[in-house]
Length: 87
Length: 403
Image (tube, rainbow over all chains, first blue to last red):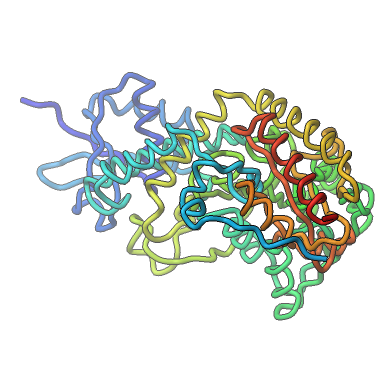
């Protein structure tokens, strides 16, 4: 069974692409995707990681000041915001 | 007094680019490095979509992001979202001036401004009650920091400095002015610097220099393509956006987003140009500003040394590489600069710029209105032979005049 997924959403593409680099530096496996419509009707990008990476992602993004950011978890087909970090 | 009409074969005019001696780098640099052209072609060929508008646009997004990061590092900025891409320095200056100033504000600037600063300020003077103090430079285009700081009043919102004049090359005292403004505390006037003639030649660190906004063209001394440029905006500044529209994200907001860079960038950007700008900044960085400056200073010495010996010439500006970048203006006694420039081009393939250089205030200051000057501006790819050809050409013009 695959790991549950986490989607990380930023308000701007610039923050999303900065986060790509941040996660890469931290050695966290990730994939950049189009923002799921069920999370936001906005255009733009998001980053998908395994749920087990959440703490490491939070540390990396906070250290690099890539905020604000919201973390969404897939709960039975619906995306639930499980963490929100303000700038 | 007029020069004889040269006889130039039509075919020669068409093929002139192969024989050109290009000394007009202050207008735009030429040639561009091969790798810059290759990057532009690659981006125009390979990048499929507009950033933020479709999954294929992610690659375009990354290309823009990489250029933004390179540009930010180049001018000493840590947060690259503070870099706003524009189509040139003029657009950057307009965003800064129109977006920052409010009706009734006071602005201090100098008599060496380009029209890209002078005209937006003149409009705001006429229409919005903005008060402008233009500090007079001396005949060499030099403005002292003390005279600029003396003009600052309690209601001064902005000081605009042209880092180096596009007419005389004179470098203005950015650090001294910045230091003086910073000493006035939190309510200090903000500092906008027009780096059209210096970015890529002189080192610029906006944080160390205390610059609040910096306008830079991509196509001059950075050796990027035309149609590129950028504006740096300090983290504690919020400007009214000059352009509003689609930003590829935050689409549900009724008004323009507040976060950068989207707040100041709307619509499809110049993706090939910005990709090439990133390559150009890498190229300049690898070359090293010290090496570039040394090369241009060597050419400057040859140019000034050669021109000084020409009978009937008047040189403008300090004629001192310690006080200016490699931009030199001159006039020949009794000849219209337009005629001199036209003759150099048509008979010898030497490209210079003549007239007012979109900077009539500067020409009023140095005493060259209304005809302006002949301006020579060597760049990275010029050689001592190019300068010798120019000096020889000017001598021939003088001989022609005497004939």
